[in-house]
Image (cartoon, rainbow over all chains, first blue to last red; front, side, top):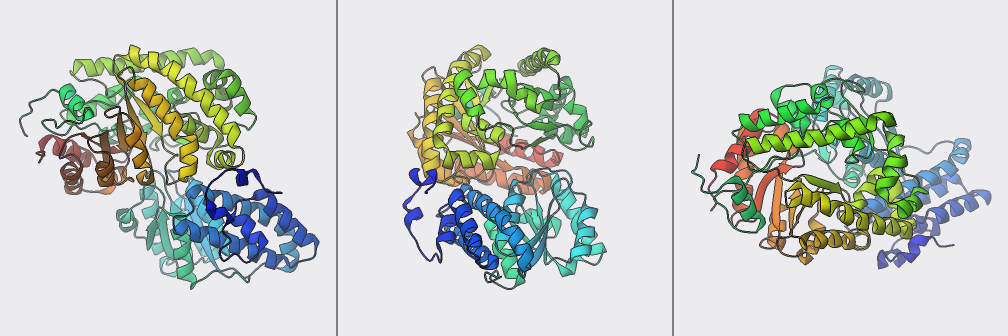
Length: 234
Length: 378
């Protein structure tokens, strides 16, 4: 059964199949939560490999990301697809636990630092990165810089990302970057800053390697750091 | 400093009417946190005392030699919450946060799906005071009248401070767009799901809220004695939503509100955060001179002038980030460039990109005010 979104004339793009490789991928691209949940359930019930099902979900997310990059999709559609993907992963998790976790594309530590409790942008980035096969260690909001250092020491990620919606978080970002440097951990990671108030000047102020206000651009940067495309094969 | 040939009111009115004033008017969005940051007060000092808020704002105003129209700055975070300006959970410095941290709004899914029906039935304002407020606030109902009365007194003190200095408040009446109110109270993801998957429910609520807004707001603006009001929207632009959503859920309601106000000569000040580049063209359909569009540093101001110059007054957009970590020279260069490119033919007000940040460098803020006062319009 088609979801109500089909009755809402967003644009003809929803009926353009493009390069979609499966009905499941397409249902994600068309932002149909109930249909995705049904398809995932049916596939698992029929004994399909959960890693393959996950890969198809990720492929749908990759197409959403491409459409966002091209301006065809908007942040709202990125947000909705991320929710659909999260729900699909929730259904898949018990099956994935049995079959063994997929090989990660890379690891990222994310945080909104002390002085800021906004997390919408960070949460979108976390979901998109997971959809691209990254392991994401999300430390939450109002995080003391020292906690970031501990997590980096423990997990040795490829990247660290700080999100901010208010300017008072800049000092915390700079402090965290300095603590990573002091701990000898800075050279082993790429440091990203993002969020509505960040600019190239903030990147320089913090001493970061990358800055963006666009979660999708953040994903592209993470992929470039770990060597290209996400592992769709898992 | 250049000699001025207009009063603040004449200068402001000339710009709103799309004319070229003696110099560009300057109206920064200075609120309690920016004022505290400028004067070196803790955030906690202005979070619990609205007399301190007003006093601190005018300290900054006087220290800078004044500016054209002060932005209302007269409430504590708690008062902003109970009056419905910030209909969200609030974390307050000195209570929930360290003394030196600015107050913060916590976004949670507080408005439930079934509440849409209640809003349609009894209106948002009654729903807010009967039910919703008690899901977000820590105060008990017996304290509400005191807080509301204090919010009104604060605004009166602010207006008196303006009067003593011979300036007119930028506005005195304000409201959030119904779309923005629903997004804040439902929180962004559930609200977006409602827009896509339960559109009729949202539309019905927007209809009711828009009608109520017009009915409630017009008498309030008239009685304020200032013939303009602030209409805030931070989440409807093309940064977030495609044109189909904008055209269905935002623009028709917006137009209705602006036209109702304009029919009584009231100018709507849009506070438009995030990037509105994709939506600018719609504003051409509003009556000429009926609105001021405030941008926050993320919309292309030059593009806005190209599309709307000579039709609506444009205001902005010295970024908060520049005021926080830039230098006075950089701020001044930004302002000069903006005045030259966007304000050269008039119809422009120099403002901050959203608010003056709590970690503003005072010398940067002074540079902004002084550049507006001294830079010659081409």
